[in-house]
Picture 1 (cartoon, rainbow, N blue to C red):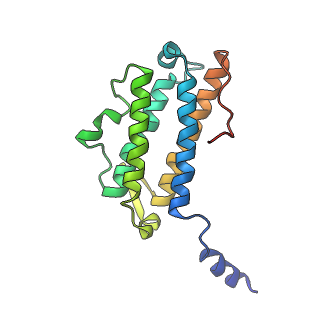
Picture 2 (spheres, helix red, strand yellow):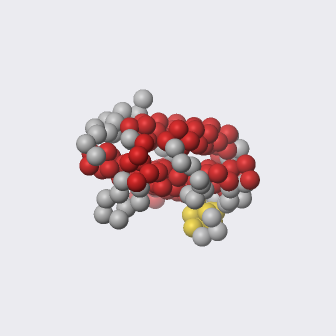
Length: 172
């Protein structure tokens, strides 16, 4: 088998389906939610290490990125609609309960927007938020990676506060 044939065969094999990618993201979101639940209320909005933002701000970023990002991918509008406006990173969310409610609402939005994405669109080039050119697939992978990164910061914060974070491998 020549190298060109191997490349052609590799390119024709789907390694993950859109449904599997959505499931993968949603199990990450379950774990990220567990980290949010583990945070003590006061420190959620005030604790910081080394100049990093408090965890509530990181959670608001994850919420806003997923909400506006999926809206953009599904509709081409890389902004929050009035209905979604409270999910931007400057949202006036002042309690852990409000953050959890917003998190859960965006989790549902992801499923709803996902259902609107044609399979062929995953390979289209988009300009996310008017600034970041990439394929839809790579843009979604960025959303997931950003969440994992910020969840990791949450783990550091919890440990520094003397709390045992949820097991990183437990995505049930």
